[in-house]
Image (tube, rainbow, N blue to C red; front, side, top):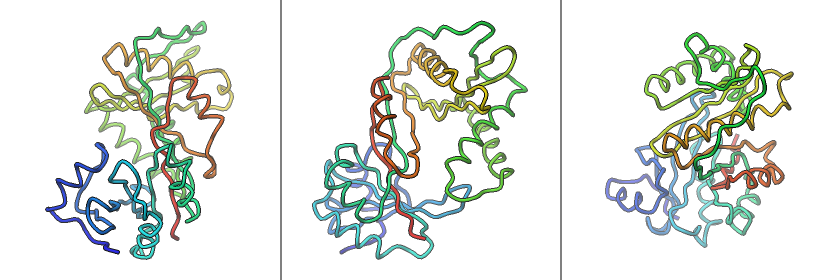
Length: 278
C-alpha cells in the first residue's frame, strides 16, 4: 500500500477530486495506488487541546472498494503524536457497508454537518418585553461567555477556562471586525437570555451555535425563536443556504433530533466519525 506525502504534481488532480471545501496544504498526503484510487489525509492541531488529528477525505463519488485495506494501512502508519483520526461520511455511506467498516474499526459518530435552504420568511412573534437584535457595544462579555460555554462542552480534554475565554475573545473580535462573524441576542425584560453566532460567506451562512446560558431560561423556546429570526434576517440579505453542526451525545447517532431537524427543513450533509488512537 502506497502511503506518501502529496507532491506539487498531485495538487490539480486532488483538487478536482476532493470536495469543494477541502483545504489542501503541506500537511497532507495520500494513501492508495494512485491519486484516482486513494484516500486523502490531512493533519491538524486543535487550537485549545493541542491534540494532533489526522483527517481522511474521500476523493471520489463513492468510497474505494478496498476501504478496509486502506484504513488498516492508514492506522498502522500513523505518526506517534496523532491523538485521533477522523473521517467525513455521507449519510448514505454512514448507514451502509462503509459506515459498518468504520464502526468495526473503532470509529464513532461525533459531529453531524447539516444544511438548510432558506427563503424569505417572516420574523417570529415575540413575547412582551422581548426583542432580538445584534449584539451591542459593551455586551461582548455575554457573547464570549456563551461561545466559551459551547466550546467547553464539546472539548474532549480539559482546558483552563481562562484559555478558552481568551481564545474565544480573540476569535470573535477578529470575526466581528472582518464582518465574517455576527452575534444576535434575545433580550427579555432588559436581560440577555440567548445568543446566536453566525458565520457569513456571501450567499451562504453558518449558524455556529445557539446558546441559552442560564438554566432558568431553558425550555422557553428561545432557541427556536432565535434560529427563526436569524433565518429571516439572513434570507432578506440574500443568504440562501444555512449550515450548522450537531455534536452527537457520547458517540450515539441522534435519530430523534435528526427527525426534528428534517421536519424543520434541515438535511444531514455528512457525519464526522472519529477514532481515538491514544
